[in-house]
Image 1 (cartoon, rainbow, N blue to C red):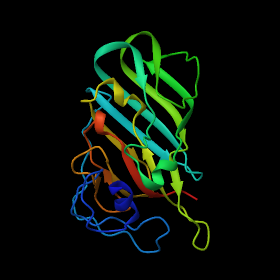
Image 2: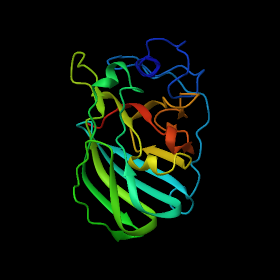
Image 3: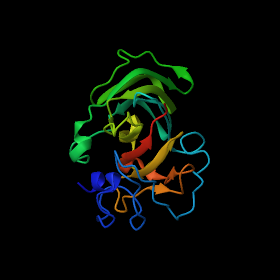
Image 4: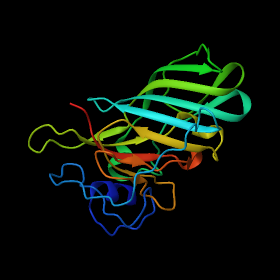
Length: 230
């Protein structure tokens, strides 16, 4: 329950076991009217070229008013592959409590392998799968819409834009050691990484809050607290 407690602000003394950089106080929880607590660490600069000019994964998530995300993943592998394992971001084992209600779904999936479009048998994913490539490739780009991974705040008293969401690269299973950069384009208030030892992975201060760069792909499950666009 540490992830949920940290995001929802139930206690400033929760042990760091699910996704951020421990001592800083969490931002206020879903339905809270308070302002986010200041975060004192300096904003990092993501490693240039991760997922594009050096092996790794670069994920950019654009939040939408309905709680879905438009996501682009750029993956660069150290060796070519002709089959791509993919996995959805949520897992009841690592996302207890309120986040266990999520049911992630990927739609409008498109794939480029070494800049060549790959025809997919389906553009919708509701579970882990394998995507065969036309030819072995080292540079892969996925674009898709992720829905069902967000839990919105209850309206108190009017409709709120506050929400919690879980994201993870679809391609995280290709190599668990690949450095991974996750970027959310707006509204980010807090982030925890449940699979990391130091679980609080938000860095900086809103509105310039970012997520710790170079997270190993096998641990790049990120639970966000954010304000969705109106």
